[in-house]
Amino acid sequence: MNWKIKKEHYKVPIKSWCDKPEEKALAQAEDLACHPLVYHHVALMPDCHPGYGMPIGGVIACIQAVIPNAVGVDIGCGMGAVKTNIHVTEETSRKKLREIVNNIKSRVPCGEGKSHKKPQVWDGFDEKLDELSERPWMDKHTRELAKRNLGTLGGGNHFIEIQADTNDTMWLMIHSGSRHLGNVIAKYYHQLAVDINTQWHSDIPTKELAFLPSESDEGRLYIHDMNFALDYASENRKRIMDNVMTAFQDMYPHAVFDEPVNIHHNYAVNENHFDKNVWVHRKGATSARMDEIGIIPGSMGTPSFIVKGLGNPKSFMSCSHGAGRVFGRTEASKKLTPKECDKAMGQIVYDRWNKIRRGKAKGLYDLGEAPQAYKDIHSVIGAQKDLVIPMVTLRPLAVVKG
Image (cartoon, rainbow, N blue to C red; front, side, top):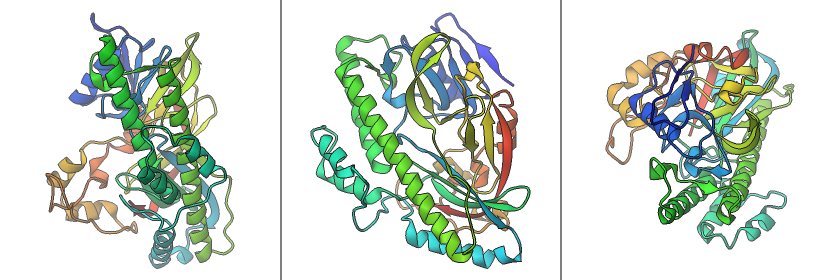
């Protein structure tokens, strides 16, 4: 289920688990293949689709360099999941699911620009923010928002779901990241990389793939600040999950939970691959080392999967991070209708579609998260049988979107 291409002007080949990458995504992969610091090959996961500079669902390794846009603007975006001891019965009616959803929304601010009214307390957080106070990207607004955004969902494709496995055991799942903090860090260091690469007349295929040498002062600062955003994103998911579990126990007081899984899929990390220490960039891709547990969600109307990694070196020990898009948000809103999207959701508890308030699609229903906007998750899972083993299949019962 994978193919490899190598053209004369490439510096490294492209290896793909995506059967038919979109034209723009393939063009971005070709830019990566021509990058002077990309090592060994470019890997495209089966959920690959266009991103900024680098495709989402892409994995690269760089020698002594980091590329901010190969991590992305939502640094540390990732998944959380936990198994409960509650089973789907008459006690888990749509009415009760709706009550849990409303309880979750009262505890977790959901949507773009939605934050806690008061700053959140996190051990050592103030000291860390003080340490970063001299960074050009850190201002009063960023600092205050970072404290109020901790434990909030955000918008777009971020979600909270109540799910059930094939044994009708209920699970809780979340998808969120570093919120405004990671976005500010990413944009600042990308522009810094562009400025430096321009000064050096660097031989890069596009400024969208501007890099920072990992041993330079600028590179070290980016890596440090990226790791702070990763810690923030992980803590953000932990707090969301704590509140979701509390809301679930309010309905089911005897609920107990297994140890939650909490993972990133937008990050760079120093690893050893093909006998070299390299900076692996996973942008919309999940680590899949041998026996490592991962989470691959579908859309809000389709199954998600708990998987176990096979440690395939050809993918830099990675797998997909989700289903991947068929339509962009605006395209979906123009091509789809609320009626057909409601039908695709079936009996799942969810909030109805809102209208878009600004931009080219203003006034249309926002259908960018409808099931039809995403690839078939079963095909995506089937395309990576050499990367992961599906362990648990989870169907959605109730969905909270940002």
